[in-house]
Image (tube, rainbow, N blue to C red; front, top):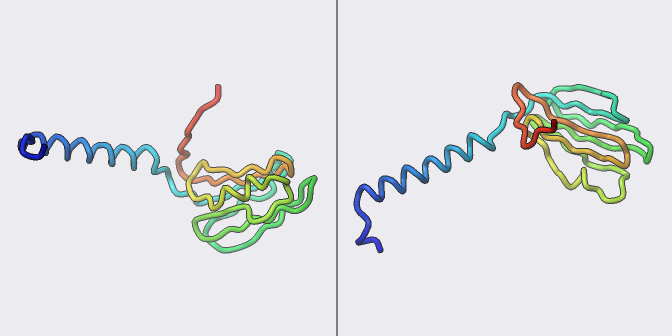
Length: 122
């Protein structure tokens, strides 16, 4: 097969591969977040910077949700919800990412200069 490829064919393949990589990074790269917004029962409990390490405890109907913040990232470390879906999301770093603990009515959202939306609701 390699003997049937010409120099122009290889150039087109390399250019196409480079374009795919560039578009992937551009489309899914997103902006690094710099702020975290913590909500309980739909109300903002705290808005803080992602610049320093700290732990925040937020009370909900089922108990206390523990949120860990480190430079450039945040996560829900512990939650009393039965299925632990928000804990399993792990560290959030990109603007627009969120972890929702619906049974305990606690949420964590990362914000930055721009938000990368994967879907929009009308």
